[in-house]
Image (tube, rainbow, N blue to C red):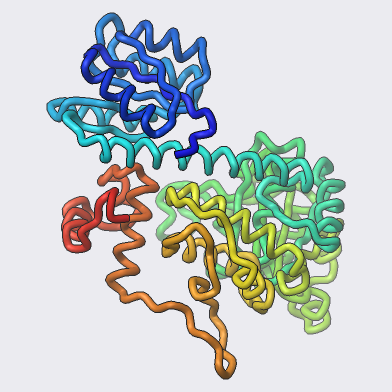
Length: 452
């Protein structure tokens, strides 16, 4: 095995076990150093550079839990595997909650240990690669989480970078799934208001009868069910940003009230008569043509010009296909790390398939497609038959490889177990079932770290 100089620190007071671990790890090509007690282990870790620590919990001078806490304080990203007797499994689980990657119970089979060690190191490698990619994207594109190198995206990000430090209102246009909220968040966090709240209001998802009280709040007794006063979104966004999504769905009567807020920077709670000063920036977004809505008398022209001080238009993914490659790899790295998968990339044919798709759901559809691919992936390269796209097949088209529902469930459960380091309580929470149901499914599907 090629380990690229990977260094492992073993901290255990049992000489026989230390010697066994040295032999097992060195046979796999790892560099190994040891410590016989907690104090020595912590001192060696702080003085050296180790990719992984194998840590016993019952140690002289300084117990394993204390060593773990100190290691994580020194390096929050430290990779630690607990080695413990079965009588202290509950303590090992507590160690995982403190940041340990996993635990191995004594006695163990060498192959079981190496599965956990190799998975831990691979996960660490993927996380480092993903961080490096994110840093590169941040240097290139300035806004965290927004990926794109096409001329259209560069133009959008250039304008967003210019308006972010100001207090100007911003109106973001874009189809569903293009990333309007992500851009709004980025503008907020690039602004002087970054330490203030970012409050989201989906104007299309809140009934008109409730939108006013959601935005501006209400006083106790304002209506039958108002048994207490309620602070609205604008007050909650004090010194921050209010993001008004689907602004075109707002009624004309509410548009008048919003216009007053933008003009006077005051609100009145429903049922109240006291003006309340608000200091919140407004960023709005829509997937509709507001100028057409103005012509149809469905949107106020004066409100439009108040909102569109800086209009930004996010292009559809089909109009920036040169970004599909970098986006696909961005999501591949993200979910490979999350699910503990070793995936190198896409075959040329698979990337061609991604680039040729119309992407009606835009970036969101691409992300969900890659997430599904990673969950079901069995090899190091993604090929065409593993990519499921929502499209009408052309004559003679090759259908994706089919999986039974049971196989899909098995793979998804295994991916979540790896993502949560085999913490059954956490995995059950992610899957939306209780621990007993998860254990039943693990047995039914014969899922283990070895079977994958």
